[in-house]
Length: 290
Image (cartoon, rainbow, N blue to C red; front, side):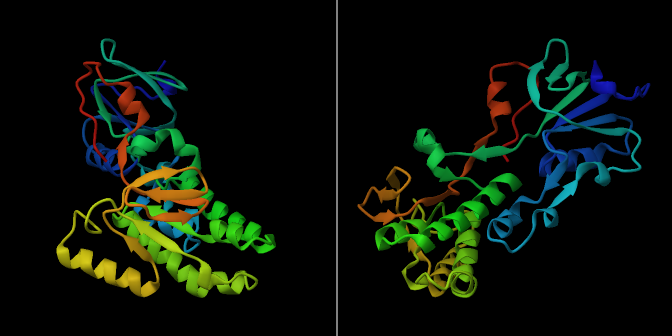
């Protein structure tokens, strides 16, 4: 039991599930207080998520935005990290069941963040690319480049268009930043790496279901983002709700169609699976929304 954790007398144990922004901030707050802090995460590194789009587009390597969790807390004897998958919470026994064994706690913090919310398209998830983790960013980068390689040897212009066109659903910060980065690649990178392809035919389309980009920001920020993206050559479709996607054709409710095999879903998040699995259990915690 307790994954070979040290015993610290007179130190109530605080178990924190999740090594993202919220979990890391909580651990830092408690690391010099009279608590034994146990941080659990399925990965042994912290990810700076706002720059995932840079990894996906080749601007940064993963080690530029990922940092080992153990190094962050070196020299803090009352804090322990364990890489583990949380399987179940037993509030009556004050125990967290994990892939490395049961871990007891006095206080529990659940900060497992969010995962991509595909809304009504969950059954089409296999056709769409998310961008909430380093593996997803690397998968997206690889997927785009593989499609360009296929387009290079294709004799069909229709197939080429479908392979090199890119659709991004969601006009929030992730979608806007990603669209801009891809537009820069279209102008400066792809023509050099793929001289056999006509980059003028490549379409980068950003679809937002509401009337404005960056909905949580000011009108000035929204208008500037729209102007800059259009200057870069990004097609921005506002009030555009996706109604159909089968892996090769995207259609919106107002009839807009785009042939593309690359659909990046940046339309929002939902609580992670581990949080949703615990709903209905009276264990004294409230899920963190981000």
